[in-house]
Image 1 (cartoon, rainbow, N blue to C red):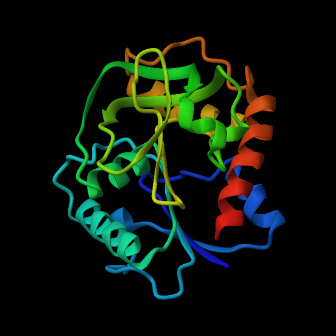
Image 2: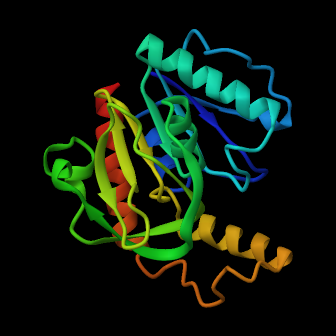
Length: 225
């Protein structure tokens, strides 16, 4: 199995997702289009694509974001499974002709996810409790694309997860975010002085549960591949 993982910021990592891939001996490669990776179409050897988060907006006029959207289009037509996380979920939603714009409020920190009715029988979201505290870091949100199945919401964000087809998923939340990943984001943001970022976020608050949940969810997605 070969996966391609699209990053959007320097130093981004897969957090809790990485040990799942390593345990299953999955071959994977990072693709950093923002840094000049020479990929302009769907890799022919791809068995699946993962799109991580990022600090930019999918609506920014960036050539490499347009390339990623094109690659998502190609993967959907070729039935190559996609997992989009945060910005990645918004890219998937936009490729499916959904809208992406500001959420009523920013969600930065630990927020409860509420699985929707379809989650009970979904291969991935069935692992979620109701409610399920997970880590979030986003200011924008997506509309539910036509034909997609709504899977989860939070108190202030209606669309937290969706499935399109059998194997394509968009998660607005960061299920991959280990304490190390969260700590790195907080240190980077502290240097920027963003007033919207809470100063009392504990990266370890729900880490044990989220690690266990991530293992179940990401393994279930890999089972589909």
